[in-house]
Image (cartoon, rainbow, N blue to C red):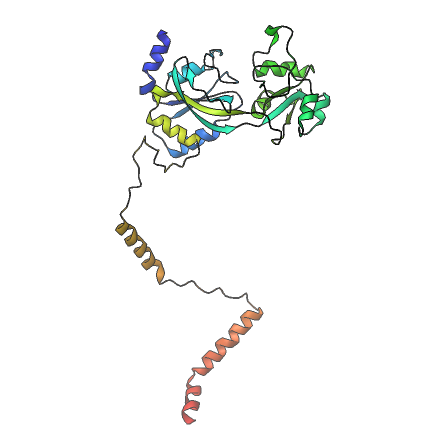
Amino acid sequence: MQKDAVLEAGASHSRSLILGFCRGTAPAKWVRRWQQAEYPIPLEPHPLDLDVYSPDAVFSDEQTLTLTEVLNRGGVALVRAPETLPPSEHTLGELQAVRLYTEANAVLTATDSLFAILSGVTTIAELQDARLLDHKLHRNDWPIAEPWHDASWLPVDAAALAELVATGVGEAVLPLPLARNVANKKQHKVVPINSAIKISSYAIFAVWLSKHNRATVQDLIGVLRGRGTASARDTSRPSTNSQESPAQIAADAHEAQRKTGGQRRRKQQPPPNSRGAQLASSKNRGHRSNHSPRSARRKKRR
């Protein structure tokens, strides 16, 4: 409790903004966009030892922040949850959640299994023919997975599940990015499930504590959702683009037209020795002869 109080006290005075991300997510593009936008505080990405959102998830190793620590420090976390059930509560308080994208599904199987022959799952019958292993992420509307004789045998996470799949005892349905994250190229094959097969999916949500809903957090949410750097939501720094009056806009347009209006585009010349070049040369010779002094004297005599 004392540690949590210290972390929370420093949340509003942090010199950086933490972005926690669960297993199977890739925050590099968002970190790059944040840096390109030149926000005043740095963004610190931290991996979470987490497959799917859990309000009381505290398991982690010494080098990994827990979800609780990220939220308590006023950070934002990318977490996985059922697409229709966004996270709303945490032991620390009420959560704000924004869905970023929905994940495709896949089957994780051993490389030497019969299921590995498939390049993709196109029918629900193919899923039903597989021997699916039960695990914490298996959804109720997915094809039925074989229950474990002892509940304690249930894999604790996707990495432990992948170890079982590698032995050839069965397959597992997982979100595609997570399956790729835990798969070993020599031991596993990831078989994507066609989106035409209507089964529920997981989604990636950005979550943060409502009590830490400050301007820099909103800036990050804008970056995560693809909002441009010139958006009005960019509240952590002053805008460099002040609004101009209609008169000023009209004056600027008139000035730009004045500078470019008298400049005619130079007519493109035909290639040398081409038929067009020969015709142009003949036309120029005729034009010069009509305006020569001799031509003028002839006209006077007539």
